[in-house]
Image (cartoon, rainbow, N blue to C red; front, side):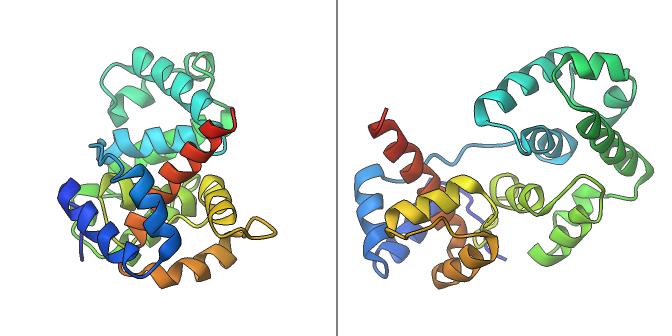
Length: 210
């Protein structure tokens, strides 16, 4: 079970990918090693990912900032103490409020033991997370990639990754989730590094066109 402990680990993985893939090599040369930002584990990290589901990056940041201002310390108990009206005031939809409450209750009851789960393999963690209502593949995979820093995780359902691959490889159409998952198999066991570089590449290419 490989993880990226620091930026040097990520750079080593990207160098290995660049040696095999000319397109990724060009992107790596232009953009360098993406930042390996520290993200909060546990309820706080999962809550932030749930808030980010199916909304733009800018909208997610605004909603999450309001949510943190309201809740203070992001703990399951504090979430359950908030009313629906308070959560709605942050910009959270009714379904997301429900998902956050389900997550908080699962952690408090012990049905979801995250510290213990963090020691497991990717598949075990993924299955445990998606078993909860409201946590889909993207959220589970991003938790593994960004929060647990698993080296070979690739959220193939992410639209930015799909668009990044379409642009980089000059594909006629944006690949769907299963097509991209199959496409990304070539980057194992460094799919997490490829994903991070592709996000950086996509954002960079979008900035050029503004």
